[in-house]
Image (cartoon, rainbow, N blue to C red; front, side, top):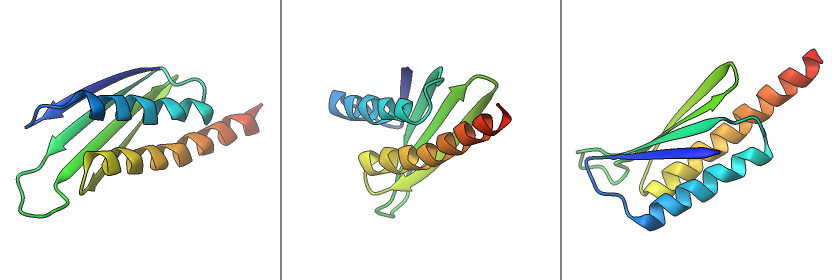
Length: 100
């Protein structure tokens, strides 16, 4: 699966990109027809500690899923997005199996 990551309002380092690629790569265990994914990492200008937003868009044949989470760190936000996408992809896989 191809992962395209973009950072808004900051420069992203290699460790964060590697973590994001690794974590989203695990989604293929749940649904093997993922075409690509786009990740937007945003640093919000607020005084809150939870000011790091991760938005993940997954493209599958005939559909796309978007999940947006905010957390204290980008790693935590990406992890929360991946967990939500796991549930969504499992639901989609079960729905497709019920049609067959």
